[in-house]
Structures are given as structure tokens and as C-alpha cells.
Image 1 (cartoon, helix red, strand yellow):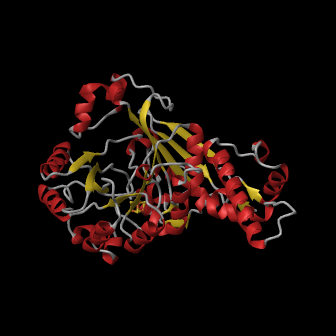
Image 2 (cartoon, rainbow, N blue to C red; image 1 turned 60 degrees about the vertical axis):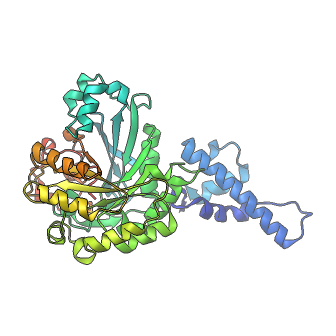
Length: 415
Ligand code: SF4
């Protein structure tokens, strides 16, 4: 059985060509071929609309598709659904899902809501803009609605997984501790967004859940093509962000085939430091990575996001901030600082608020946009790999059997 969500629109149209019909009076083989292709393309567009924009997952309900075509699709093509095995909403509105795949392996996705500015009030906005933490208490004070409807939130970001586990072994990351089980197929990536969209009006997608997306680049390229397709999920290229730990050749491959936004998990100001926490740096050091970033065809005022997990007394000094500012010179960029969320899978500590704000200020004074990632989903294990670990379905679970929900907070990106 072919899986519908594993195909781009062009691939699906190819599949439909033999089902196309032309008038018997038409005898010119070239004309027949052109007409059949045109019909197949139109049908593919219609069916993409049904699935990705109207969320119809039964062939029989696609009323404008010919009966005989529907019958063939029913026999040969499956519209895939993920099985939700767990879903929980945090006090701050973050919603975490655990999906069971056909081989019983599990993956996670998170919906991260961002409040409407007018709803949260100037006081809280100022705190956010200053990089202060936006705790659940502030959320409550501002009277936010926790329901996931489009009127309550300015942005609903879907943070999705690209692999079951991860091979990159970043030292600060719980998924890194677990190791790689397998990469996800295109449809398993696409369906995370589809399932979330059936539950909430998702506005943005970030590949910052479990796994290194560019270690699964072929499937991620196809998934991005479906997400950006105007007949498919119809996301703007600005709203889909692939985050990588720095697989340089795959960055180039990604941009040969699709045009999404890019985030780099930088996390260090020197190669020595980075190689200690990110083994990928030994193969593609910072200067090679930044050279690849300089070649990314951004255009239209787009910027690359550099994620920087701040680890106490390791990479959080003012000297580190100055080095980061220097190395990013000339790259249209913004820096997202992520104070480390302590967990039992790593020995690092969270930096002090003072150190975080100082780091941020140095970058801002150097002319960068530098934001501080607020902790989200602390009460529901919304960090990558954490929910899966709790349920004992990940590799290396025995390493943190003592894991407690209060240990966790979101790292919607650690990659
Ligand atoms: S931070 Fe990202 S790339 Fe590194 S181990 Fe974790 S999931 Fe993999």
C-alpha cells in the first residue's frame, strides 16, 4: 500500500496519470499524454486540498473526485494517521503529544502557544522584551485563555520530531543520551503537523523536537515541500524552520531542494568548547559551519537563528558573548539564548538570571537581536526526549529512571 503523505504533489500526480481519461476521438499520442498529465495534476491538487486543508482522511468523502478514481485510491493508497498515545496540556498552554508509530516506536510533538500582545499587557511585554522569564504566574495574572483556539494566541508553533532518538550525542540533551533508533519516514514527519492542525490552528513549524533533521535530510526535504505547497499545508517559507546541529553538506542539500528558514544550534563560542558538548563539531567546526551559513540564499530580510543553550560556568561568560558577536558578523542573524533546563541526563547547571541578561545585553549592544527562550511546559515534560523517557520507550531510559516531571521544561530546540 502506498502512503499518501509520503508523496509530494508532483509524485502523487504521476501516480494518477494511468487513471486519467481522454476522449476516444483523440488519437495523437502526444496530445493524449499532455491531457492525461494535466488531468492528473488537477486531481492531485484537489486531493491535496481535501487532506491538507480540509482534513478529510476518507477517500469516499472527496465528493469531487470520480468514483472509479476513489475506488482505485481506496485499494492502493492509504491516508496515514498517527495514533495519539498521550496528550497533555501544561499550565502555560504548552501541549505535548506522544504518538505511537506502526512499529510501536514513539515520537513527540509539542504545540507552543505565544500570547497575543494585547492580551498579556504592557507590563509582561516589557518583561519579555527584556528577556526575563515569562512564568506561569505571569500568564495567569494576564488572564490568558489556555484553550488552543486561534483567537487566544498570536502564534501556535508546532515543534516536531525528525527521528526516533538522535545520533548526534549533544551532551546537554536528553534525546542525545538516548541514541538513535531510526529516522522518520516522510509521512511520519508530515502527519505530526497534520494531526496537530486537526487539533489547533498551527501557524509555525519548527523541526526542534527529537532528532537531527538534517541527518534525515531526504525525508525532511520532501516533508518541507508538502508543508510549503500551496495546495498542501500552504505554510510560508518564513514559518517553517529547520534546526540543525551543523551537518554542513546537508545544509547545502536542503537549499538545493526547498527554501525554509534555518536555525543553527551553536551553543559555544570556540571550537574547543563546542567539540566538548557537540561531537558534530569535530567534523564540521564552527568556521566551516558559518561559511555554509553565509551561502544560504536568504533574501527578503530573512535571518538565520542561532540557538545558544547557556550552560552555567561553561559557555555563559561575557567573553563568550563577545566572541559570539564577533563570529556572527556579516551573517543576517538573530540569537536565541536558552538558559539550560537541568535534567538528570546531564551534569550541567542552569546559568544565573544575571549571567543570562548580561550575555543578552552584550549581543544587543553589538547590534544583534537577542532573545531569551522562556521555559515552557515545565509541568508536562515538554523538553525533547523527556516525555518519551518517562514512558520508558526510549533507548537509554535506564540512565534516568529517576526522572520527575518537575525536572523538565521545554527545549523546543535543543537541536
Ligand atoms: S540537541 Fe538536537 S542534535 Fe543534539 S542530541 Fe539533542 S536532538 Fe540530537
